[in-house]
Amino acid sequence: MNRNRWILAALLVLLAIALLDRGGQDGWFSSLSGDSKGSEKEPSLSAMAAEGAPKPGTAAPAFSLPGLDGKTYEVGGKRDKVLLLNFWASWCDPCKEEAPELKALAEKYKDSLDIYAVNVTLYDKLDEAKAFVKEYGYTFPVLLDEKEEAYRMFNGIAFPTNVLIDEQGVIRDIIVGVIPPEELEAKIKNLI
Image (tube, rainbow, N blue to C red; front, top):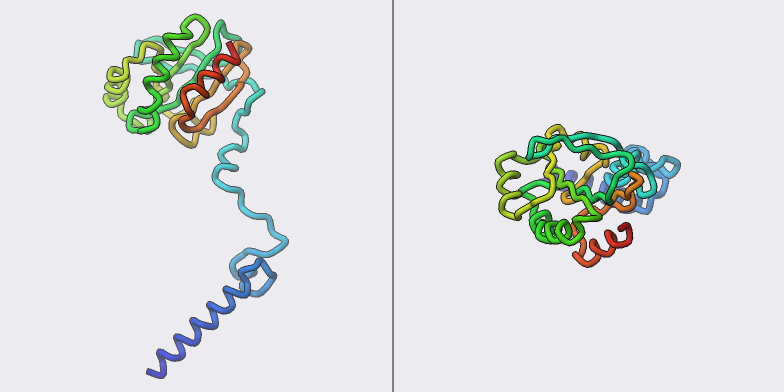
């Protein structure tokens, strides 16, 4: 019984020290945890992902990938049309949500917009990706990023990720996640 009191007392003392140190004051507890006033904070995951990533106003990284149709598709440099790169996976619910809109945009702007649906196959299964394409009736090129090389060039962190590239090969927008269809269409119209 006496031993339990000492353990409880020690826990209360440690709790009190932690609460006193919580305000970021320089104390011995801070130095034990490696968190002192003079040290810089660790960058967040999103900050690390954004570091070195291409940004709007910069040239799109050049790459080529095979398509489901057996052709090879290239990105980088000048183009005849605006390009929407759509990084996706078949298991991604937001990707399923935006799939009908991508199909509609491809049909509506076929003369001035290319859409490349880049399946990040490293995180997917080819059979499931093919079933997704069939289910949603994609008529635009579906590229296979089997080693995640293109997705990594854009420091991809979530599906879907959409990248708008103008005819000069310059990134104009990077959209992580789903946005309302009319907002995506407005972004495309601004580039066409």
